[in-house]
Length: 128
Image 1: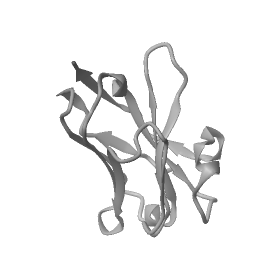
Image 2: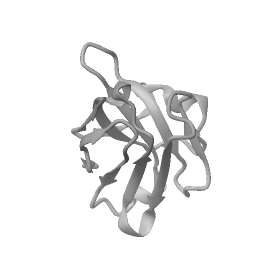
Image 3: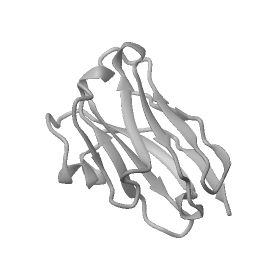
């Protein structure tokens, strides 16, 4: 069982920045693709970004493209989501998830069902 722990959420003003982290003690985390998702109150969980296991390929939702950057440090078993130019509509609980089986990322990364492990989430609130 892989345990993922998100951190870095909090309160930010519109136009500000936050960096989320997704960490695990699992030594083979570096072999997994990882996705970030978010869920706003009353809405379904939606895809935000994904990164391949090597970190050489990334994929973003249109709503965050150009503002958010996903990256990873496999030596630290950690994936990051740098969020810049935050908007009030970015307010949500953010979750990271590990995909054990996929060798590539892309459109299929949007599918919640392909992820095998999920973190507990971290709240991001953006004030206007």
